[in-house]
Length: 214
Length: 399
Image (cartoon, rainbow over all chains, first blue to last red):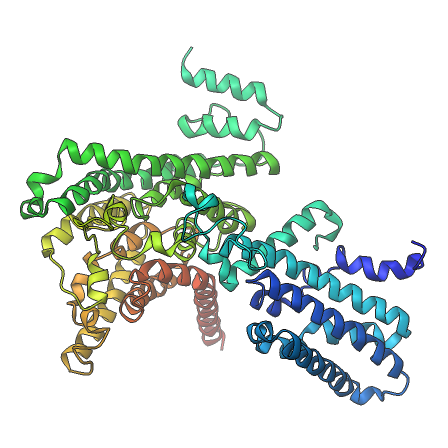
């Protein structure tokens, strides 16, 4: 890669696979279960978290030398809260329907463990550029899992992708519904999201035995 | 050369290869193997896991045969209601058997075919012996689903139940949840239109729904949940001439199966008895509440609450669940005291869910799954209590 040094590109690529925040660190599970019933919601959530974590990491990194360590958690909360409010307002302005669908979960990005985790573990000890890459990478790793889970849940649960009926019309009985296929209602319930995340973890660790803990 | 010798040769031929577990399983399922352990101490007993499983299957066979007749009988009786006037005369007929076999046997075949295929694949990949756990599960599954469930749905559910319910935990003996009930719960939440309502329990009811001579195949629990009366007598319920999942309608045969399991010491009488007690206690509480006038007749719950407590025992899948699934030795409590607690809450919660959640008229499935989760905790506290009591006794002695 010409654009990034090898060390920097690892900051982005590692969290996508071998150090994924959801499947390896098991952080940010709650929102992965809550909003992945539709692919569109998953994608918006992923983009929102990328924006919040990318910018947030830079802000914290710039302030890292002036934050008294005793109150650093509160400072971090203020930063992430401010960013989340901005994202929320942008969604309300430009994608009102979607923001109603995501409702409280955009606000709850504040409590997403990945964000505070990266602030604490990375941004407080590294420069702004590296922190930015780290934030983008981790949020993208989180988003990747969200999109995978959202893809399967929407496809198998509602027979649609991004709202398009890719499997045919369940009421008119066209496409695969003509031969007796039916949507799997269980996919729309949260437990199934947990099981899909579990299956991803299983596949990942089966492919890379080094990830298996004792 | 007999079959046994053939199987033995096959086994020898594949020894040490990847496919070995599959041939070992075929051999030991049918015959006692000749070889003995070469080192260490070993115990020789007749009731290994396969024999235990076969005992349960034997206890299930009457339910299966009855279920086959019942599938046909419910279909014809729904078309011609006069058949119901004399169920005994019209039940064991060839017509019923042929139609029933046509609908039920495919369920059994799919359940075993898919389930054992998954087990064999896992055994070959992981390189261990094929585990016997699916033998009973495969027989239970067709008995606890509605007759008209599409076969592909059953296959999906079986794959889910065996992989997620059992193999991810390490296979037979390690699973937390009863696999047969995991399969049913998956179907129930994934395809509710095929698992509940008044159109799924009788073969053909769904197709005839749009025609003028539509037939109603509501279960008794379904009717009660809507405060409707039902047209079946107590003896119909006891012998099992009522609509329901394939093999769970006949309380009489389940009772026989239960006695057989207790007699052969395969099923725990403690769990069965305490479950019945739990159901009776909850039923009595509801009866009392209904009699005392705490609940209005117009209430949604009145129909089920005022139903005499002992009817609950012969209605729906409670008896089947208690005898064949609550007693699953892997997922139940292991300690004797734990078994009483575990069983009691299964009965208690079954009736609670049955009455208070009209969307889930059959509470026994959810009650058993819930208590499966709690079983290790119950055992833990029973053990701790025992240790504490003995420590106290020891202190009293030494002091």
